[in-house]
Image (cartoon, rainbow, N blue to C red; front, side, top):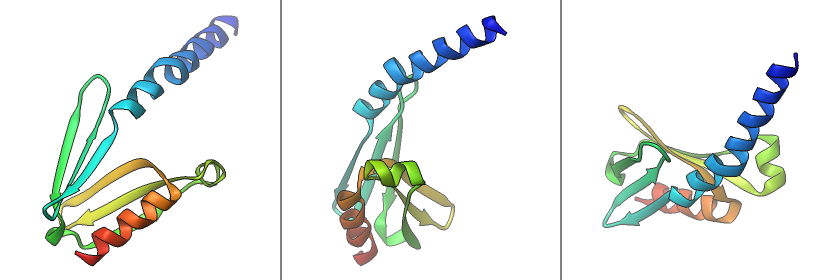
Length: 103
């Protein structure tokens, strides 16, 4: 009982206090010369690149909590998968989705 509670509090403190801020500092994207590049990760950094001519669909998604916070998730789909930007301001997600859709 108590050991599990202490472990849960420690895990939550790590995620909320260290991991999440580090993740958000690393998260970035760029849209240049018809290519979307997304960089994310803390312990291992993942760089995803997609030629926008390959994009088949784009969607802006959110959970109820994300909507309360004004945050959205952008997903760009292509034939072999998708690229996700997990946390964008609502207006930024909408304008980026429109830009991707135009190309």
